[in-house]
Length: 517
Image (cartoon, rainbow, N blue to C red):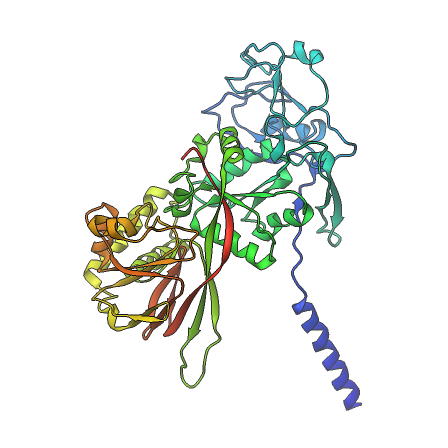
């Protein structure tokens, strides 16, 4: 009997182990429109809206960010029952216009007669929520009923190309995309938008809502509810077409998406373009997407045009192998990190670490780019008095391509892959020494290593009054820490116990560079 019980126990352990070892399954989640519209808060100060049910002026109401239907609070239930939302999937090989009455932009022109639309102070004229065409009610008969998905159809996954399925257990069943068929036109290169609705000063939510109104809503992924792997699953659903990924966020969000691409082993990796919503946005600056976007002022149609004409380039991506030193007779397990922008050890990472701790605190209420820069300034100023990274040259050893480098007295070492650092500073070519420095590129398989004297030196670089300590360029960089020191990689900081950090080239990722830069 003991043998039987032991066998059963081992069998249960084996089943549990197999379940835990099972690879994660990622799915493209689709909203069930039969449950109603996707209601969002309405900004009544910037635009006058009329209820699509009672046709009265909306003073306090909501709008659907997928199809554009507006309703006051008393009419929301009626709108869910009587007005169809933007469908994610349909049958056939074409799709009819999905007209939504009223609430047009003030600059709207009729597609048929080219005269202004929606100028009356009422629920007048119509707009197709797929092709974005506007038309007078009297001109509807003169326009064909088949929708061609509009001028940006190359980015849109038409509903007649999508097949859905119902998955999950009873009570938690939901729709996912089962299959995607290419549309009967070329070129076609779907755009997948990933952003965190909680990022920035509500900028992430505004951008997600804007793209749901232009693309198929299933193409828009909120990282606050789903992992980036769910958005990248489109690459598996559409294997024979180029899928572009638009990341709306800061450098940390970009690195999160790139790590997901590495995890899924997508070959070839999908090209990225960026809407900068972070504090530094160095990656977006290098590739011409701006230093920081304000969602309320962002022209989505102009952005799509920029993506269409953007130039495809490649940027190096580096692997950082962290080997901890033996402690109390035990050797901790090694770790791996990946870098695209830059990494640093010392005072630069300390300021980032202090800011990160503040951002993770429950007292952090004001999510604003200007306020974040003020926090960086505050922590940098505090370090002038504390000097926590003083004499760092005695705690760190550096090798470039296997050759040891004698370090001067400093408080930080920064390893650069892209030219921009610290919210737009280009340190490698700053000052008189920068004119003689070797060229810096993000696709040459080389890293640039610089030293910083102090946080005051960082501030001087920010305003162009100094230049860094250029320690050299290398294909391989090794940094050995003999004490616990702050480290940051692409804006993600931590305190690193004594260890060796080994930087080697991992590969390259495709990125679109904005020609309008």
